[in-house]
Length: 432
Ligand code: ZN
Image (cartoon, rainbow, N blue to C red; front, side, top):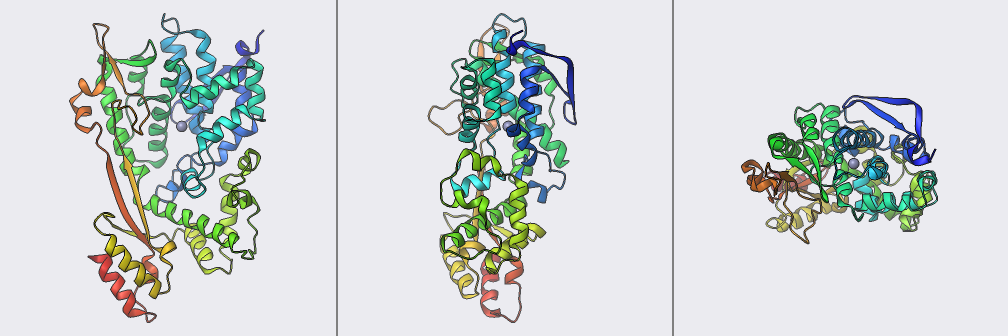
């Protein structure tokens, strides 16, 4: 029997709190789950520093990847199978791309990407086509198969129907993470009727469309996504932890460049600091390693590095005030001066952070949101973009909301005898 169609003698199931069970029958999928590159995802949290805000949010990218695989499996096996527009030979490709779509994520992805100018999508591609266990398994299907999986994930694969299963504005990726993140954070947003949405999905030429009768379930999904962004993903406390994490990485890099004598040498960071990161180095990084350094660096002699690490490990985070960078740049300059006078380096202790989201967007060529829009399938067989049919979606379409905050260590500018005057001035400015 060909490896691509080989089935396990008995179905394997993973117990899952969101989908109840994740079912695996295909030998290829089972083998991919067993690779060390996929197992590494167990040691990378899905929501980065969010566990410091919502203590339940300790779930990993491993959980989420299995969930995305399960949703795609249900779409192709239960909904698309047997329909004339669906090609069964693309089934395994869809499942592999779903399972592996986040394979290149590193520890605390967002912060690492920002500080070291990395791109997890680049690493996903590199793992799939590089010298890895994942690559060996995919190559056993056929020689061109790893490249096809990489193309689906990179959204360049010729059959856009397959791409849209994994990256559109209503794809298996988003449907899994919204529900999973809601479950683990314990918030009441993020829930929607996925069963209903799966039932009304149809393959239509080069995309997945939704039967018009399922429009209200889709509206609910879009609103829950909007709520999750502002209530969970952009939570100001999570961002505070991210600000500190980012500053730790900056500080460690800076010290390395200054030939500072670390008590605990950051050997896992050397190639990152020197911009010579190889795939092999990258795959050694996970959150256990990073937290080891943060734990140990609490004892370093450099006061900034040790203070920031203590803050991160013990959750003594920065406080924040609302901030308008375009209007308040003078205030920021004034504060920076006062911080310096008070002995606090504003580079590390006075930080503006901005977050923004687009709840739903129809296609506008050249804009940064590259996910495909949602199309409804009308009874007449005609296809229409969602915001033209739904007033609710139309009302929020294309509206980017941005939020800026200014972060600082309130405890260090609390009133004490040291530099009391300056600290008082800082507080007065922050309060106005
Ligand atoms: Zn994902």
